[in-house]
Length: 112
Image (cartoon, rainbow, N blue to C red; front, top):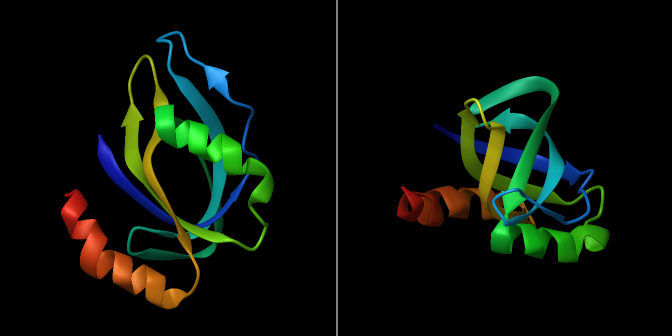
């Protein structure tokens, strides 16, 4: 698995679903031009899934997310026989650029 960090806009949040493993999840799309430290010229579409408590939380806030709201999305990219995609561990709302700097200076290192 590889660490995934994307900063962008969340759209297309699905209805809450139940997996075969009996866990709840939602699927969504992150539109970003920041993947890790790479800055792309145009937005990339990244599909992801949020499970359990994070999935339930995203489902509750689905209708309150505005198109201009930015988020830091952290997770792990996984490709195997059963699952291909990004499983999200944390979603953080970005109010301004200092939130991004603050996250990388303090919170990010605690997660590693």
